[in-house]
Length: 118
Image (cartoon, rainbow, N blue to C red; front, top):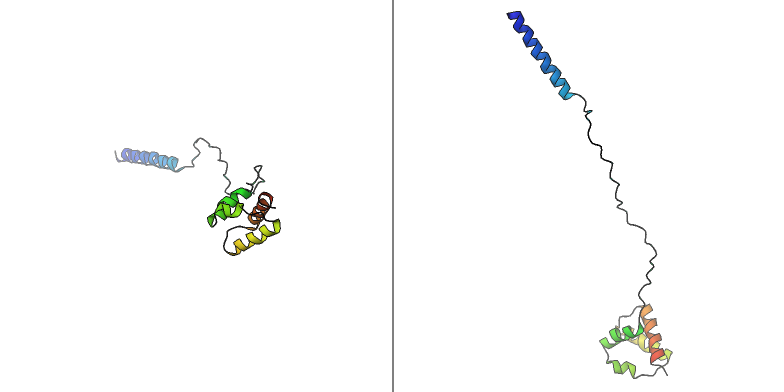
């Protein structure tokens, strides 16, 4: 009886060992393969030339927005000055704090000379 129980113990031990080895074996199970995602670019694209033209600076709008911040519009529109006089006057106003960049200044002077010139 001892020999027979010893065989059973060995048999059970072998079954347990085979089971453990099978459980710890390589994982060659068929798992669904998912195609790799396309990597999203985190780079900032180069600046592309726009088909939309930049907003044009409007002399009349500059007159309304900038000059009337300090002056009555009639004070400006009642003048009949030459291009040189408008250049001098606008330059003086910029010197006193009028907020115009170089391009805006040029557009405003041209607008004033064309519309309120001699």
